[in-house]
Image 1 (cartoon, rainbow, N blue to C red):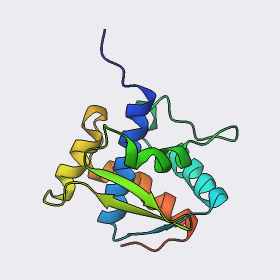
Image 2 (image 1 turned 120 degrees about the vertical axis):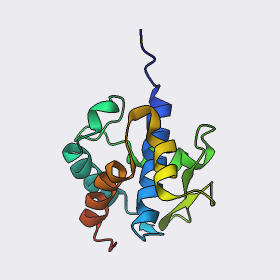
Image 3 (image 1 turned 45 degrees about the vertical axis):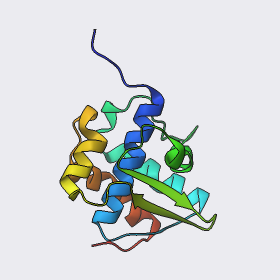
Image 4 (image 1 turned 135 degrees about the horizontal axis):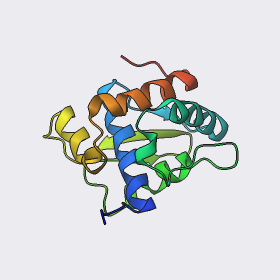
Length: 136
């Protein structure tokens, strides 16, 4: 029987992937507005072709995991390449491996799930777009 990643491992990968993709897109801060974050994530998640690889991530009208994903990102022991911090008005993506390239960072975050940099960007870009955050 193949190993199924835990909910925490799935949330860690999504948090790292979003951090890496945001930074790769030139975004170093995201407004901390609960409703905007959740609505934008729900929309981006539903359209994301890789979402079936993360069955424990919730992004629907009942519950959205994005705040937990961002809030717990820095303290997760599995977070090896990227994380998020906040000053309560803004979220800041950051790298834990400064000397790695974007593709290597993304592969490390999503390797277990077979998500590369383009895959993470295809989640982060619409998430940012729906919040009105400009990116490259």
